[in-house]
Length: 113
Image (cartoon, rainbow, N blue to C red):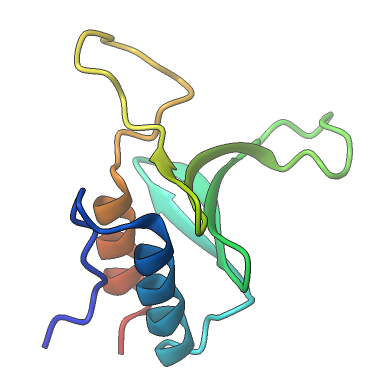
């Protein structure tokens, strides 16, 4: 059975967040930071009472504490956004190339029970 939340464009952000939160609870990941790898790059994902977020981990050692990277996906009760690469841009270092649904599939493949 596929229990990955439906990220239909017509689904309101609050409903999408509620579905993601429920799945993170089922996976015993709620409130925890988990690490994902995509195309050799590391990402930190977390889902809690306020948001589902994914940050690209900045691998540079000289970065000050509290600056883990930059957001590539964020779902709150008010908005759902991702940094999916624009097709016209050949190389975009800040884009992950994944949509919200792609991220949810990757989390399911990595941590699903």
